[in-house]
Length: 267
Length: 257
Image 1 (cartoon, each protein chain N blue to C red):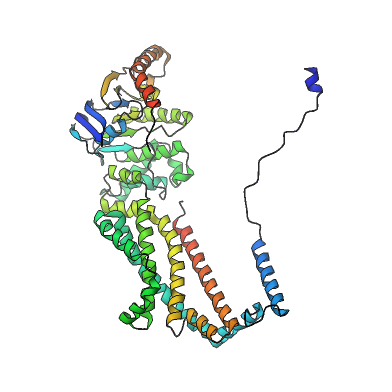
Image 2 (image 1 turned 120 degrees about the horizontal axis):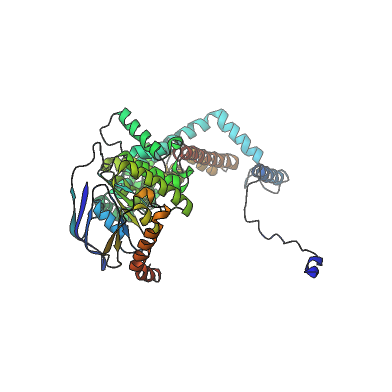
């Protein structure tokens, strides 16, 4: 006993911790500033020819020009209205079909083969056909976006309804809750997290199809603007247009985040 | 209300879950269905309350439902089955909303159910903010709000830890002491059955049959009293002899999938 107490007591070495990545404040802005500074330095020193890649300042000038000339407003308005109509129509129809397929065997039996057959078609390939049907104007572009949004929304629609725990439905049945009330009070709120996650996917699809459709045949719109700038080798305008798209994507993602927080407070 | 189970059998594919079940749940009593896992006791409970269609046999009721009963056969679930997007009061309200009650009567029933289960302070809380014991209290409040004629409890305490279970058992005994609702209590826990039930139907495994029905002739409130300890222990040992081998088989079973 005496011997043991005489021996030096060693500290138990700490072996835990780590593997908990967090976010450092300001890191994002710092990285952005560094990239812009390096980019500007490369441009200013002549390492990066303006024809290949304009400098950040040139992009800013191009952006200011767009703003002053009013082109930005016109193009953005055209694009926003196409995306808003296309996404809303595609989402409304997709949710109606998807939720019906989540509830009724008949809807599911008909719907799944149709969706499986049509889902893999790149919807932009249908634009020429849609132009023949609806003309070169807005409806053909809106329809392309709506179709592109429709199919993934159908799939998230019925899989979100499938994911609602069946024990909640049995519970409602055990209290004799009527069928329509089960759909409204249990299936729909229960499917909401999945449906909102699907909105993120469908909104990015809508943006891709918007740009593609505008590049194929449109006078106005951010996609058309980018294409024209490329044809004229105005890389500063081109990059400014890309930045506008990126901001548009971020704005949509922000709005969806707000919507999720508002609707899923309970989660 | 009396509940009569007559010749009920049930199969899942090739598996005979229940065979020839004959049971009578008497007015105002608590009947425990006791058996090891896989004896079909939850299946039987589902059949008794009309949530599951039996392969054979039928379930009948006799007698009048208590006045003001909105949902004659009401369940309390093992996993609580609460809507996470509704508050405690909202979850209780779900059971009442489709009945033509006045707003005042609905609010009164919700308040009363929450008071009975000690949840008044938690009316506006969401289920995820509550402990398991409190969540099951919401399940019990929801069931009492409709004044059931027969209350079906499917392992109501099995998702809770031992201490919480003890607290909730005391509360349930108190509630039962007041309401005397006819109840069927499914459990695999012999202690729970001995605490909560007037009679215990011991089920065998695969196929589930009623092995024996054991009466516990001690008032619920006095089950813990020292003078009854010997009787309880004797009952415990007798029932344990009945189920011991089956529990062992169930324990050693390898599950598919």
